[in-house]
Image (tube, rainbow, N blue to C red; front, side, top):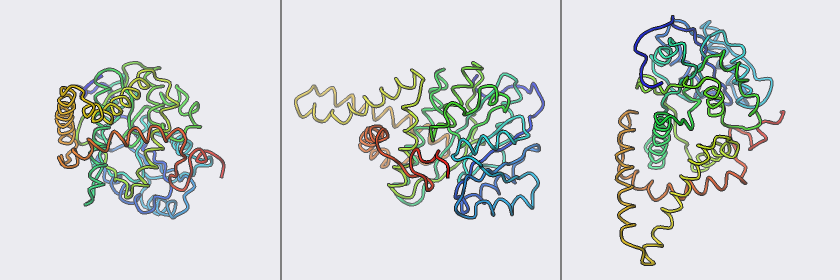
Length: 346
């Protein structure tokens, strides 16, 4: 399915927003305020505390005391997927919407997502996510690189071969989640709660996935403050690729890796006397990517920084190859947990 639903077929569904939160006492209040301001009439918010070491639970408890739409739950297992599953099982809504505790959403976020689920054939919808940059050039680079990922997710969906989505802006029917077994076969993988669930749902319900291409549905998150934080985040994301059973996704990953390796080695070929036409191929690739990213940033309401784009052309190939290789052997740290230890009992 593509585009915006043209007519209402069923009543507006009840919605349960489920958020797994670990050590988010500083970022969570802003999101809770955004959710309290939603213009959608029938929703609840379940925040599942995933063994936080800070005051996350106290923040949610205080908020829930003043608004019955908000509930605090505790993850009795360990890990984000277990936390999400705890919230989903306890949810009263027909449609589950997930986001991250450090995100921000607009007042029409839920009402925009709900429109798609007034069509009975829709089982899952994923929306765009953008990063909010600060004054640093490193932050601007992250914003532009992440915009390209959002564009790639939308593009592969439009081509009929969706490869990934983002759990920071994801909605699905609770009945579909239960029908496909939720996260039961990939709980051992720390990331991928969004992508693996998407594949299971579209395997069970073909043509049931939609991309929400409406600006009011955009979710905003922050860039990582340091190179170390960024690296560990991307190592965590890349770690799920080796567990992916989708042939098209594996082929896409191989293609991306080969393209970036070609970019890295191209100057050596030119120096060695390779045809000058190879240099023109490189320049043409940059022009095409600039137009592509410009269109994406306009949709996301972000500025297109040409200096950041040029820098990414030379940084990105080395970054992709390095993260892809190191994700197989290097442990990562995330919210006080290390690699696979995120799934071991506390």
